[in-house]
Length: 315
Ligand code: UGA
Ligand code: MN
Image 1 (cartoon, rainbow, N blue to C red):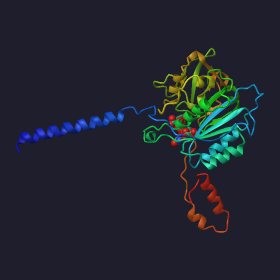
Image 2 (image 1 turned 90 degrees about the vertical axis):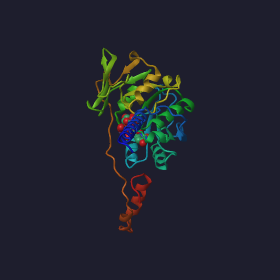
Image 3 (image 1 turned 60 degrees about the vertical axis):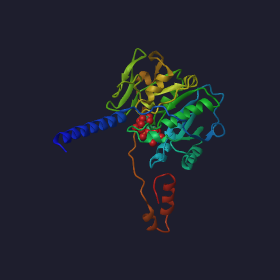
Image 4 (image 1 turned 120 degrees about the vertical axis):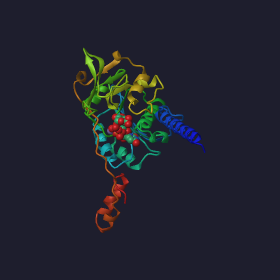
C-alpha cells in the first residue's frame, strides 16, 4: 500500500471517529422525554377517609390534602412515623401517602392504619426509563398519582393540596395558614441550597421576585415544600408534574397559569421559616444473620425479624 493510501485511510478513520463521538455527545445531551409515552401504573390500596377519625363535615375549614411520596429504604419508617405523628395533630387533613413501588407495602399500610389519621394509600412506581437518567425525577410518579386520584376519586374535591416529602419537617402553624389558600400560597423553606432558604421576595404584601440559590431559567424558582394550591386549580386543568428533575415545581406552577399577583405570601409575609427541607443520613441495611445465630434464646431473632419487616435489615 502506498504511503498516500495509508494517510488517506488514516484521515478517513479519524473522520469516522470524530463523527462517532459527535453523534454520541449529541444523543447524550438531547433532553430526555419529560412526558411519559404511556400511563403510569397506579395501585389504589386503601383510602380511609371517614371511618376512623371522621372528617368533620360541620367544620367549615377547607380540607388539607398533604401529598407525601415515599420509597422503601432503611430510614423510611422513621421518617413516616415522625411526619405522621406531626400530621396527626392537625384536624381536617387527609394524608396521601404514595409509594414509589409496584404495590403498597404492608409496613406502610400498618403504620397508616395505626395512626388513625384520614389517609389515602397509593403506589405508583417511577417508570423504568427515568431511573437511569443523570438527574432522577424523584417522587414525581407518586405526586402525579395523587393528583389523578384527587381529580378522579376524591369524594370531596374542595380544599388545598400540599406536597410534603417524607423527610421534611413542618411546623403545624403553617398547615393552618395554608389551608385558606385561594389559588397558590407560598412561603420560605429552610435548609435549601446555598442560602439555606428559598423564599419569594415580598414587597408591600406582593410577591415580586425570588430569593433562591438556584434560579436559572425557572419562572417559579421554589422548593417542592414551598407552595400550596387550591384544589379548584387542580380540578380546572389536567396539568401534571413533569418528569424533569429540578423543574418539577416550576413547570407544574406554569401549567396552572398563575400570575405573580395571585401568589399569596404566608409565614408572616415570608419572614418566618416554618418548613424545612431536612435530609436524613442514608444507611445501608445490615445483614444480621450471623448475629441472630450467635444470640440464641434471646430477643435478637425477633428484633432482627421486625427490622427486616420494616426494611431496616436483611437476615
Ligand atoms: C428534592 C426535592 O425537594 C424533591 O421534592 C424532588 O422530588 C427531588 O429533589 C428531586 O427532584 O429529585 P431531595 O431531598 O433531594 O428532594 O430528594 P429525596 O428526599 O430523596 O426525594 C424526594 C421525595 O421523593 C421523598 O419524599 C422521597 O421519599 C421520594 N422518593 C425518592 C421516591 O419516591 N422515590 C425515589 O426513588 C426517591
Ligand atoms: Mn429529601
